[in-house]
Image 1: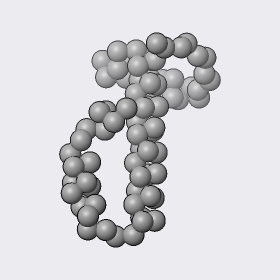
Image 2: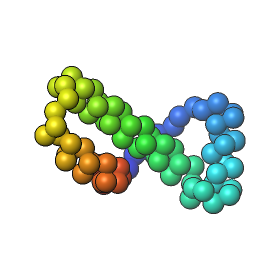
Image 3: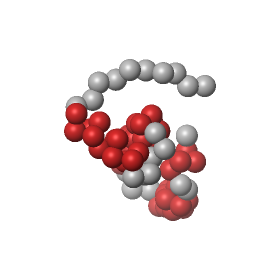
Image 4: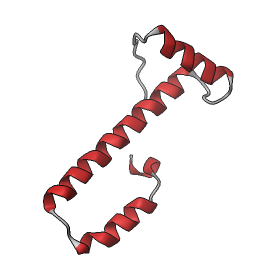
Length: 78
């Protein structure tokens, strides 16, 4: 399911989005905005996880988990 929303963006961002669509780097404005929001969400999740691991201190038992997590594409985490 998807929901339509209205957002205001600075002219230079709209120009960038339109150029990306024109050049075929994104199928639509909405697709590029959704991709950018998804990327931000994944980055924030990774930052949160890094903070949790840092607070727990160095732990050799987590090395295998970190290696596995580094090999999993971020898109598969949603």
